[in-house]
Every structure is written in C-alpha cells, then in structure tokens.
Image 1: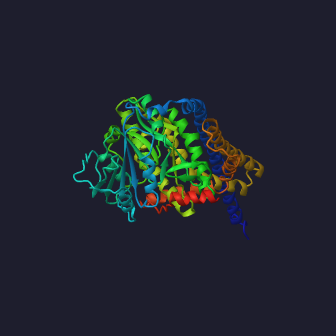
Image 2: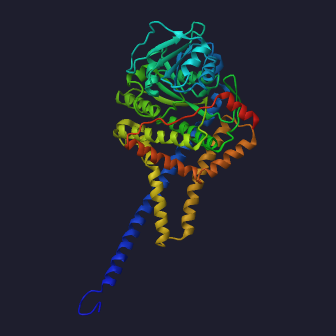
Length: 498
C-alpha cells in the first residue's frame, strides 16, 4: 500500500536522501581533490626552488672546497678559539673514540668539554681511566645560563684541553648549558658523543666564520652516515655505504636533507635547524637568548629559531650558514625500534617548536623566517603526514564513487613519485659535482635504487612515526627513547668483513 492515498513512498525518500548524501560526498571530495592538487604543486615548487638555490651555489662551494687555503689556518693565531661541547648519556662504547678523534683535530686552539649527563652505564669511568682524570678543585663555572648543579669537573694536566663535567641527568639541552658555563672560548661547537669529525672539519667551519665574523651567529656542518665505513683511530679511513637496510635509507635521506635542502635554505638565510650532531655558534648570542631549551627534544631546532627571533627583533644583521665541506660522521639507528623512537622524538620536537613560535609564521617582521621558513615547516613538515593520509582516503573515495578513471590516479601518483625521485637524484648529483666521496660505481647505483624504493613503504612509515610523535606530545610523553650504540671498532670490523 506504500505510495497510496497521498502518503510518500519511504523507499523513494530513502533513495533520495542517499542520492543527496552521495552528491554531497562527491562535492566534498572534489573540493578536497582541488586543494590536494594545489598543495602538491606548491610543495614541489618549494622543494625544487630550494634545490635550484643549492645548485646555484654548488660551484662556489666546490671552488671553496678545492682551492681554499684552509690548511694554512690550522697554525694561525688569527683563528678564533673554540670550545667543543660533547653531551654524553650512556655512551661508554663510543665516547673514548670520539674524544680521541676530537683531541687530534687540525685546529690551533680549542678545548673539549665532555658532559656526562648522569649516565647509568660506565661513561664517566671509562673516561677517567683512559685519560687519568681527577676531580678539579674549585672549577670556574660562570653560571651564565641556568642548569642543574654539577657534581664535579674532572681534569688531567697531561691533557690540558680536555675537561669532563659530571652532572645529574637533565637532558641534552641542560648538558649543553652546563658545558657553556664551563667553556673558556668565544665560539662553541656541539658534537654528539656517537659522532666523529673529519680532521679538517673544524678549520673549514672557522674559515667560513672568518669571512664575516660580525654577522655569523651559527654554522651547521654536514652530517654523514658512518655505518659501513672503515674506522681506524677515530677517523674514517674508507668511505662506504651501510650494509643494512635502515641505515641505507637514512643515508639517502641525509644526503637529500643536507645537500639538497640546507645549502638552499642557507643561501636565503632561512635555515631553521643546525644539526645537534655538529654545529658552531657564537657563545655571546647563545647566552643572550638564554641557552638551550630543556624539557623537550628538538633543542637543535629551538636554538636556531631563538637566534633568528633575537637578531630580527633587535634589527641586527646576521646570517646562519651551512658548511657542507665540514663533515661529521655519525652512527645511524640500524633497527626498526631505535629508528622509530628517533623519528617520533623528532616529530615531538618539531611540533613543540612550531606551537611555541606560531607568532612568527606569516609575520613580515621576521622576513624569510616568518614568510617562508616557518609556514613551510608548519604546512609541509608538521602537517604533511595528515595531508598524506587524507589524500589517500580521498583517492579511495574517488575510486569507490567512480569519480575518475584509475589511469588518472596512476598518472597523479607517478608524477608525485618522479618529482620526489628527481629531488633525491639531484642531491646525489650535487654530491658528485662538489665532493665525489663515493668512489665505487656500485655505491652510486645503490643510492639511486634506495632513492626509488623508499617511496614504497619507508616514506609512509616516516609519516606514521611523525603522527605518533605528535600523539606522544599531546600525552606529555617526553621520553628520549632507547638508543643502543655499537663501538666504532665493531662497526669497522663489520665493514671490513663485508
């Protein structure tokens, strides 16, 4: 009897509602599809523009690397003195090799300050035994920056340029602040305890600093993956790529980030991070901004943002530069668990820094930082994983509602893949034009291969880890995560046997 005597047909009404719902869903997907298209176009324009800046400067870098008289500076009294700060937490298997490397750098005047951050292993013990260190009575701590009260400072006159601070656990930022308070020189350099500097890395940085010492407030060094290399006496003797999958993906990532990205950002004075593994700073400006921020990871990004803000708000001319010739070799995580912990921590740090400094974004007062760097990091770094997920869901919806042909989606995906792959190949080309560190053709082939396959799972994992880091931030999870180290000798033996 449905539909008789003027009563509406409920089935027809349901079908009408369903049709209107599908139409609304189609409209939403269409609008979002247009947004996603412009988003992808914009991010690729930014990526390729930064890459173009990198290529524009690569020949200058090449000439500087090849013909610079930096070696003549190693014995010059004009070179500024530097304090090397080495935060160490549970680094007993790597710290001795690291310190030996730092004590033999080609540099005229510098000191090495290792900060034992309440290690639960024998980090302090191996340092004391290896270098014969004893407590220093009445050490001169300037207390320029707030930090935890230290337990003691260890010293041995036979190693006049080496100091070891022992303090309660307070995190990497607190350790760096303690090191600054003890430091004796106008420049400071932060070095990770699981990293090794090339012998001329510091003098190359100093040469760049001396080009414009009045305006240079920070310089970042190039960080390379040491997994797979042959290490002897605290130095990389033979460069080779990692044998394991996870470090290999990171080697590709680092090359793209440092050569393909930071050269370009440095050119426009928009660099937002100097890697905590290796950077050089003017101590007076670091003290002026209150030192490193504790309580959250991402202290290496935070100190650079604070320096940009301070210089711009005080209308001071400055530059934050990147020196790709100054190379630091670091151990990369070689298991899924350790790598995921690291990337979640990076995600927390990035989100924390964006939230703390949101007022800089789109603000002409902060010039390149406000109009380009901060918006880029918010939209294309912090929010990128969410756009990727919603974009994937939108593509699924397109297919289910028969809104487009699968070939169109395939072409869209292929364009995205090729643009990302070209950026990775561009970074590899920059490496070959300027530095040629990879001597074997097989290494170049492997780099090209991993640059391609990272888009089939690894890139998606990176987005997932970042979202998990954001969730940890919202839950106030501030754990550093387990980072298992391997001795340099073990890594070298593995590389030799491979």
